[in-house]
Image (tube, rainbow, N blue to C red; front, side, top):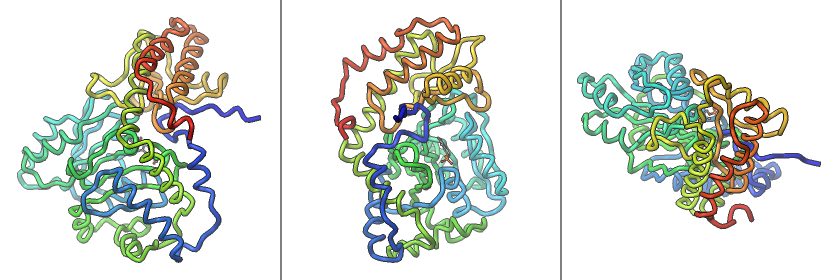
Length: 396
Ligand SMILES: *Cc1c(COP(=O)(O)O)cnc(C)c1O
């Protein structure tokens, strides 16, 4: 008997059966045309999900973190300056990675719960009259706090400053679940991973590169071999790969994009927005609030719930796992213990989310927190009943 519950962590996400089956393929020769037939649709699909215009897609056997490393090592040189705001664990870890590569990171410290500070970014770029800043790093969806930043706004700030830096965006927990407009936002590198919006196992870093990023690749001097985009792109041109690709995952990626496009990307994004709103209604009914400081910052893929004084969010996550076999996310870094996180991205329906909310309530009651069983569930039910979207995904 299997007692597999859905997970409510913000990645890895639940894997649809159709994708599990698609990953399960016999060995094939990755130097044969059979691989190119499988690979090309995946690359073309990523291009559509990212809304690219020109540029190239690179798919590496790695994870999102490797995607960050590939982005910087392929475009920058030792000592180069990059500008980044720090407002959560993931923006922090990207900064740390840059520092370990010998980059000079100009950090804008920003309270956790806030998003990318547009005015401070514009001011920093305006002050950089010597043009030292080569890239602006932005975390589209800060998974630690459940905050979505305004990437179009960052592009406007860069343009207003008249600065020529590149714009690199971590979209690991947004791409495939929330609208992403690589061309319209003037993004030079977008980084995604396979195990969040794409609903695959971990194992692929998925990147979109603009023509400007491709030009930077020619002069960048940070060392790279496994992640060298030049090797990847030369091999792609011949339908191949510079080393052994993760063939099963790439087959799964093509299937994932089919599922997303069968539902329709705008419907996928609308579903995530609805699921998230239901979760937030439940949080309000519990008398709690999201870590994200204001509604314009609310993430559609993860809600970090601030727990009441005297309560510890990590206790809830532990109890949910031990007693009910359900996974929520713990608070990370500065908000450890202060929040627990509900992931609501990927293959999820209203009914699945309701089960997660019900489980969270049972844990709160078990821990002696003051919450009325059913209060959050009822608030979410009311919202979902009024905006039901059909069962296209559930029937898959
Ligand atoms: C998950 C995540 C990462 C890290 O990705 P890995 O695949 O675990 O290496 C980076 N950034 C954000 C915003 C994430 O949510």
